[in-house]
Amino acid sequence: MKYKTIIIDDEDKLREVLAIKISKHCPDLTIVAKARNADEAYDLITEHNPDLIFLDIAMPGQSGFDLIAKFDSINFEIIFATGYNEYALDALKVSAVDYLLKPIKNADLITAVELAKERISTKEKLKDYDLLKHNIENIGDQKTKIAIPGSESYQFVEVEYIISCQGWQKYTKISLKNGDSIISSYNIGVYRDMLSSFGFFSCHKSFLINNAHVRTYVKEGFVIMSDGSKLPVSRRKKKEFLDKFVNNA
Image 1 (tube, rainbow, N blue to C red):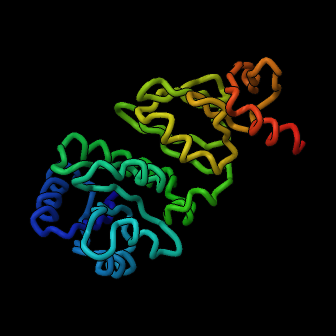
Image 2: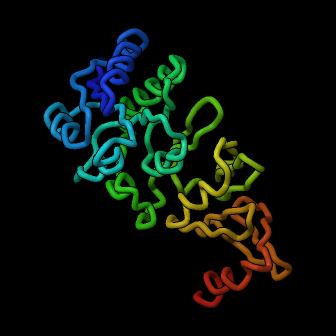
């Protein structure tokens, strides 16, 4: 299968370099168009209906995120390719396949493309326009799938299967209701921002819990989750927790 691909970058040379890399290392991709700005990209995406786009973020005029917001629905995958690393959280929030820093390494490109192909073939395309508009605070459906990045791959998990998140320095341990756990390469602050609107509560600076999996509150200051785990509720968070779970019950 060939995957129609569009490259969007305001720098001519970088578009050409990426096109050469794709041609050499990702033969399943067919580059159907290249764009230098958001307006041009919008017209080309509408015309070609691509499977995948490579999208620069910081462009003159409108940004890559501005381009995404132009669409009423999204039926293509996104790989961000940028020279700046401060947009990683935003890229994660819009469920991009991957976030590649320039100059792009061949191995990183190949990995990102394989992830994109997997999502396309299994029809795990982005389903929520509001997510793509970077309005994640308005989303609440726990059936939504999120991409959890590890050191070498992404795992796609429905929010409802997450019981809790525990911060481990720069990493996060994500506990699932089947008993498995995932170690993510993002810190817990990323998941606190991402999941707050999906019915998660930050009960402690190092813990984030899924409200749907809370079973018991013990007045000593901890909760028992659906998997039997006991997680602390900090003194600072106790009143907020009780207001949410007890006083409004």
